[in-house]
View (cartoon, rainbow, N blue to C red):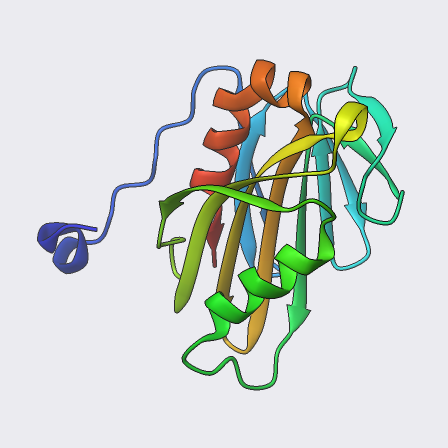
Length: 171
């Protein structure tokens, strides 16, 4: 955010013609995605996926997931502390089998106190996934966005998944 954005307020991002903006005020976040994608409420968040997304067993516990797809979840956090983002990334690395950090994308999510956006891979062989994750803290809440898919699905949808992850914001 630039100097004038801080003083005058940031202009709202313009949506692409075929995109929709959604706000989950009760959960404290806003996101945008292609207008034809399906948005499903889940416990503590939402799942977003193309209508033709495959349901595949995820390598993390075998739980079925959309490929490609995005999951945004919110949980309460008592005291995030100064290393909260680093601690959450570290915890996430043990949650996903075969976890491998790929690259850091950014250190901010709009309206978050602390945040990180990064790409990682997990799983092996035919069950290998790529993902972009946005982790953000605000008002004693942890917001986690994971945009992932099998390596093939992820590569084909990379631009869309990155745009969803980097456009994620807290309200």
